[in-house]
Length: 109
Image (cartoon, rainbow, N blue to C red; front, side):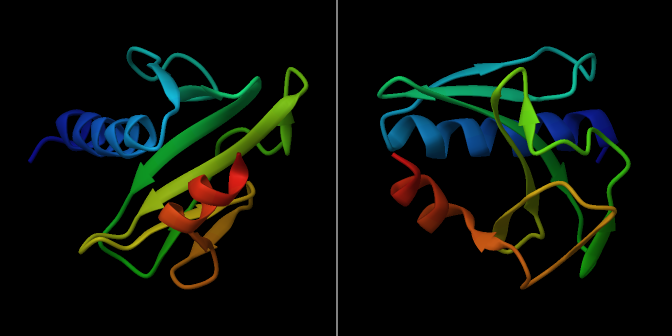
């Protein structure tokens, strides 16, 4: 599967999960910005960068701030087989060390 299409599919899956929980989600087209998804719920705005891998860790080289334009910024990694985790930006993101995506979005708002 081509990398861009795989990235799109993962972003779309994350977007649909957020929308099911009542979030308004805007997907940034292409890889032009620091965030792939801009998410809003109950007056709260959150930025997500979405990554995917089949390995147990991923080396992240993107935006490293915890805030972007004054709003929270997180990296969401799909490790496959339903294991989606949320991280604060770091150089190495390891499977099992992030927060479960479903739990994260339910408690955030």
